[in-house]
Amino acid sequence: MDAVCGRAARDGVPGVFGRGRRVVAAPGFCAVLLLFYALLIAVRIPNIWLKGRFWAEEGAVYFRNARLESWPDALFAVHTGYLNLSASIAGLLAARLVPLEAAPWISTGFALVIQLLPAILLMTSGISWLRDRWALGLALLMLLIPHGSGEVWLNSITSQFHLCLCVALILASPLRGGSIGWLRAAIIVLAPLSGPASTFLAPLFLLRAAIERSWGRAGQGGLLAAMAAVQVLMVFLHPEPARGIGIGPRLLALVIYEKHVLLPLLGFDHASRLTAGLIDMVRGRQSLWPEMLAGVAASGLIATAVVTTRDAFSQWLLAAGALVMAMSYFGALGQHIDLLGISFGDRYAYVPSALFGLVVLALAHTGGLGTRRIATCVTLWIICIGMNDFMWVPPGFSDGSTWSAEVARWRQDHAYNVEFWPNGWRWPIGDNP
Image (tube, helix red, strand yellow):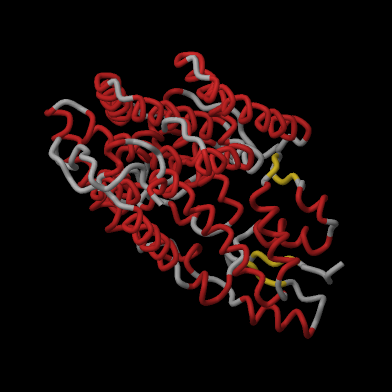
């Protein structure tokens, strides 16, 4: 059980607010903390469990494919230009293991397991300061509180983003063998085959392998690169016309200002008021130098602090967050100017937001005295703002049709198109093959 949290509970580690010695998180504490973490995930949107939910393409594409097609066709289905193996697996399990009435809970349960993986990776990371109970608890909160995360909550089509977060954590953490090493290898295989975001990190694995002259890291990078090559091939073979390619530096700086400065520091309401007319101002070519400079300055400050600490964990987390952020916004679906909508493209912001939060927390433990003090204050502020908004989820994500009622109507009339979440997503589900 010591593998759960690293080392024995008697070891000393840096404290949350300084470099004092604290009792580290023992395996039993980690198990209780993981259970509490799962509970927070589950209770955030209770109607998912009470009503039964397939979210959008989770039901209309992947679950429907699993019911109507052979399992190989359903497993390797390409949607919006790429493979999403995690959604396909969840759809197949939901369609083939249980009666139709129980199907959504299988898919939701699968998504819950995936969403727990980043927490497990933090607990088994081998990072010394994460053996501190308070530090570990705050790190898990950083995974929960990114604003707009309701879009990636407990549904298998967005499990790809939690898997991408896992890959970034694997990149930044020391190498591990045994069962933890096998778990990391399985994630490295599944993540890039579930969405493009994880593929962006393959060059960073290979770069770290070259810097450290590590065959273990090279093996991780090679495995990720091989799976990424399959996903890239799918993207080229199945181009998605709705996917815009490219984002200018001006727009990128404004998106960073809104999604990675205002939202975590001020919360949804204040950020919404400050950015209400931002899209119109950009279209009107108004001067937005203060907003752009705020985004650039925040990026520069955190990068400078991380480089100064020479802490490998925070440096690779920052590199991963910056790369995933830039590439996700670069290839986002829809018009890129819409990213300035306060609730648009939240799924693209989740991974970098979580990673940047962990970087600030890392600075509170690894920086110099002044950096630690500032980073501690910023950490606590971000968590207070994030937890204040945590339980509020937009109505479109927090409520929808009742699955049992939809299935009952379909059983009376097989021509009836069942309604998935959000309201209005009606599709035929057909008969079982």
